[in-house]
Amino acid sequence: MIIKELKKVEDLDAGIKLWNKNYTKYSLKRDLYRQNLLAPYSGLQVRLFGGFEDNNLIVFAVIKQPVVELVNYVGPERGWISLLVADEGAGSKSWRQMLAYITEELEDAGAKFISYGQDPQNFLPGLPVDYEFEKEAWLEAGFQAAGLESDLRRVYEAEPDAREFSDESYQVKQAEIADRKNLLNFLAKEFPGRWQYEAENISCWPGGLFDYYLLLKEDTIIGFARTNRQDGFYKGPNVNFGGKTGKVFAGLGPLGIAESWRGKGLSTPFLQQILKKLYNDGYREITIDWTTLIEYYKRFGYKVVNQYIPLQKELN
Image 1 (cartoon, rainbow, N blue to C red):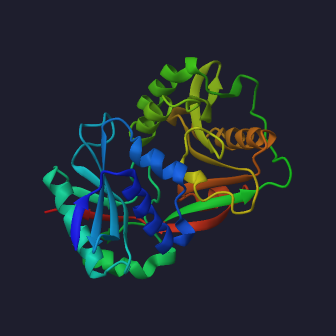
Image 2: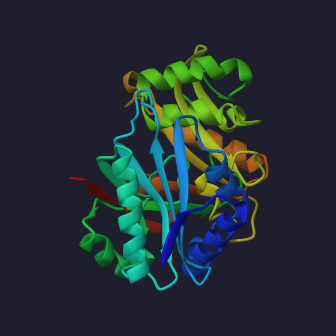
């Protein structure tokens, strides 16, 4: 097998075709994978690799790594395997050869830790439990399982209930261009890290800022939430597996309340009012991805539809 770095869109499409054949339930839509891999976030390097026999692609991999220190988040010491698929399956000779190859590439570039999934502009937060039989191959390669993440979904047949806030000084609004600076300052203070980094990048896309909702207390941001819509310009991962019911669909998350305002009963009316706004905009199927808060969202009628096992490895 010959492994080489891919530099043509047709090779990317062939790699995704191989992924979609092997992971049918987790098939990736063209708009999403081209966005995530060909228009990466700032400071992030994306590399694609293919393994070939007789000019046929038999294994495909995507790795990601920061090329600079991402403020409040992570630096080049962290690498991600975004996708890895072999025609003969996980644990096969070609799969193991590709995994060793991309691990060395990440290590040579300064990575000390590697995760499978959970990357910026991620597709999956880990190994789907549907393919847990593959976990042994990852464990043999030195990776460790770290918890369980879930995707949740609900279809709304009627307008959802929306509890009111305790007084009229609270307001839920869709973010506008003028809100960008205040939103980013809020995230840098309250949620430094991935959510801040995502917002810095997504808010630069056409319409990207409008997918954010703000919880205001007398014009001061005390909470935020992000939505993704099937017809939005920016495609979030929580809409990739949407539309299974044939309904118009959207995604919700992340959502966060400022630390000093937690425990005041604000998250429920904030969530409900966003869901009501989505319903009134025509969205009937809502997916909440990559969460451990199963019991919380069950209160709102959400059910688990996908689950994943995060995998991580520390390099010597």
